[in-house]
Length: 321
Image 1: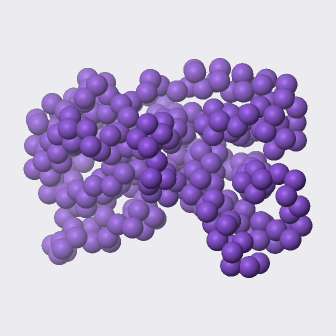
Image 2: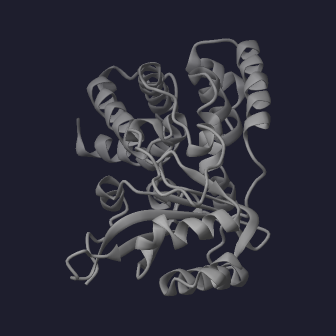
């Protein structure tokens, strides 16, 4: 394959990763799916006859890859899907579950265009937020593909039918069922993340100051009354400032003295958390923290503890001195 064709295919990698991420709920599976898509496109490009656009052809390949992967995979979930909220006074969070069961985070920079206009960027961020991606995983894989193609990517019913080798009536029926499931499964939308918004910047600055000082009174003042805290791969999750404060005072008190480095994930403000190193030499990775904001207060704190995989994905340092 010529370098020109390879460059042409690579133009579509970010949007294909976004599509496959919404399909699979995992940044790592999305990258695997897109890599397989590129390999198949590379091998089959000579036979591509241009009866559809190159973009449509790539999406057809990516969809087939994702449908095959989805058939073999367990549905990805969030801790809140496993049972009721736990007790902030718990002295042990319980055993963790394998990475393969969780909806995981993804860096915005891997899937969102840098030059997008602000309105388009806000809409894109809404369709990669954790709650939406988790709700997508409740759909059968083909319904999931239909909804993403029609509602997120704005493909026509005919284009979607052609890609999935089905009828327009079949697409419309699948979309109707998918919408009904999503309406029941998706919580109300959080505030769109706007890095230049003064109110959000002030809230996040107060969060960093309170957390790094481990001032739990100041931190609690930033939380909604029904704010949640989750910590995949741990199944335990908490609801309400009193339980969150109890956890951070007790079992979670090892976070005292942490440092936070800002990043962006799933269209949400995020931070890499580094805890003091046990050997006293700087700070070591502990968690990738995603915050959900509603009405100017923090509605959810999502901690992802698999830093061995996540920090390299986000190009984060492996230690702070």
